[in-house]
Image (cartoon, rainbow, N blue to C red; front, side, top):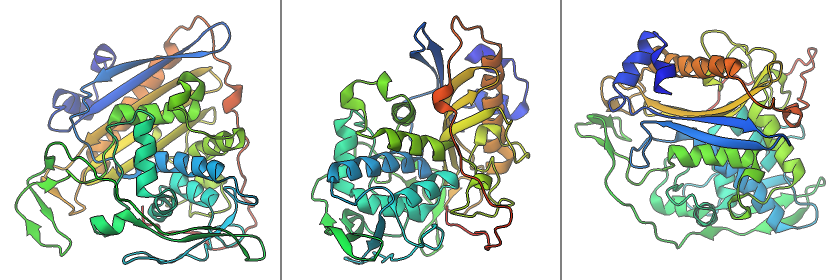
Length: 404
């Protein structure tokens, strides 16, 4: 990996690779080789990766929440309840917000399917909060730890809630098409305790909730946490469940797999519900390894991924497929770009440092994979999916502003 990246003379790439501690750079390149029977075999290569090097996962935690939401639906096994079933969220505790309608969906109602679409297409934060409330803090952490993701900890919604408020989740009702309640999930409270090993402090100063500048590092010890290797393994498990033992697989059905794969790789311009403004939410909006000023990806390429950005951290976990050249690989990376050392001020070098770095990184490995000789070319037909299509005559207003 070092030799490959060393050959790229890009100034931003070399600067960050030579200062990995300052920019908190971590990279996992996953080489995939198929055997005679088209079974994939994975080998990871690492640069500066450590479970002790904290990065703020931001919206990448939406990936495990989507997987766990679908798994929980399958475990409910109640007639009429599935990912497309209408839902109603009640307010059951302080800080909670009711949700009865969703104007972005085809039928005007919330559903797990619509939350997943919104979380993957443009990284909508409310969609994450609603999946968190459905799965519940207790189940989501117990299940991830049970599967071996022992260093992952997801404790917070993307709302200004206290620790106690994050432990409480809403009453949720599932409705039939006539609005009749067919299943109720009661409000829940997580009584499990959590171990917070070590103090994680980053930066020189931060703005608190009252926009006052606090002249000390920001403490992330009790924030959401996921290691880069866990993140790579979560995506691999979603796309290649057969590459893991049964104990480390999510309990999903075939239609769940196809649904996940579709919206991990579909573009906003292809999606009628939600109908996003494609000037703002262009095709490469959440495809960092292919975002370099241009808004489109090559027609022969699909990227199945989840990104996150907040507090100066920018992260992308991707499976990249080129159908024309029969090429596939995974790339997972995170970088921290915050020159002034002040957190929560929304002054970060995403455009000038983080995105150019991730773009060069992605293109270096993509070009390498195009050149790499394989004993057996992969048959990628399972990832040739049917995508939605927008009606060009659709005159509905587009969504232009989203909390993400």
